[in-house]
Image (cartoon, rainbow, N blue to C red):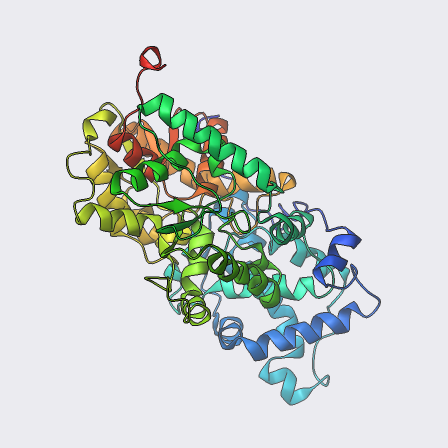
Length: 486
C-alpha cells in the first residue's frame, strides 16, 4: 500500500492496548536477578521502585509535575500519528504514570495522605496499560522539542520500564538479548567461531569485489581502532560493514573487533542502572583485553547515544590505560570525517562511482537528538556522492522522524506497532521521492537500515536503503563488475 494513501487512523482510546511484548521466562528473570512475574507483594514492590526512581532521578519528578496538558506533543509522536491512540501520545503515556504519582507521591499526596485522596487505582488493568504503552515508545525524544516546557518524556518511559522490571514485567526479547551479551558478547547469540568465520569470508569478498587485499581482523591486540559494531552488520548489512574496512585500509589504520563485545547497543538500559552498567563494563574489559589506541562505535544509533553519554565514566575507568590515545569513544563518522579533513583519502575518493544514485539522508533520532552529530555524516556524503538530498525541513535535522523500531521495539510481536511508528516517516519519504526524485535512503543506524529495508516495501516505496559508510566505501574502492572478478 502506498504510504501517502494509507488513511490516518481514527482516534480511539486503547486502540493499541493489545500490542504488548511477550513476557520473559522465569529462568531468564532469575538469571537477570529480578523477581518472578507479579510476586504476591507486587503492588508494594512497584510503589517502592517508583519512590526510588523519584529519589534517584531529579528530572523524573519535574517531568511528572510540569505537564499542563496543552497537547503540543501529540502531533510530534510517530506512534500517535500511526495508531491514533490517545494513550500513545507522550502526554497520554506519561499520564499512566501520573495516576500513581498523584495518588502516592505528589505534594498533595504527601500533605493529605490517604485523606481526601481518590481510591487506590493500582490494579492489574493499570499494570497492563503500563506493559503495553511503555513499550510502544522508542525514546526518540522528538516530543521534547515540541513541548513548550521542554519536558523529556523519555525519562518517564525509561523509569517506568525499570519499575516494571522490579515486579518481573520484562519483555522476553529484551531479557534474551541482555543475557546473550553477557554470554557471547552479542544479543544474537553468535559464538566467536561464527564471528571469526564471517570476517574471513568478508576478506575474500572484498578481494573479489575490489581487487584489494583488506583485513577484517578479530581479537587482535594493539590495533589503532577497536570497532564496536551492531552484530547484524557483517551479515545483513555487509555493504556498510565493508565500508568500514575500506576506510581503514585507505587511511592505513589497523583495526579489530572483539568477540568479548561485538554489540554496540545496550539493552540493559531498558532494565535498570545495574544491568546497563554490566553491559557498559564489557566495553572497558574488551578494551583492556585488546589495548587499542581508539574505541570507535559503528553506525549504531542507540549504541552511540549511550556510549557517548557514558564517555566520562568510560574515561575514568580507562584513565590508567596508557595505550589509548583517546579515553572517550568516537563515532565512526567522526573518525572518517577527521580522516577526510586530514587528506587521508586524497587521490583515492571517486564520487563518480555513485553516479546515478540520488539518496535522501534520513538522520537517525538517536544521532540527531541524543548523539551530538550533525555535520560529520553530511561531510562524508558530500565527499562520496555527487548528489544527495536532505529531508524536508519540518522532518529533517533535529526534527527528524523516528523509524519506529529502536528503543527495544525489535520483538516480532511488535511488528504492527513498528509499522505504525514508521508510517509518518514513510509518508515523508514518499513525498521526497515524488518531489525531489530520490532513488535511495542513506542513514547511519543499523536499526534504521533493518526497519526501512523491511517497512518501506510494505508501503510500496521502491527505495533502496544504505549506510553512510557503504557509500563512502564504494567511492573509495568501487566494486568491480561481476564479469571482471576472478
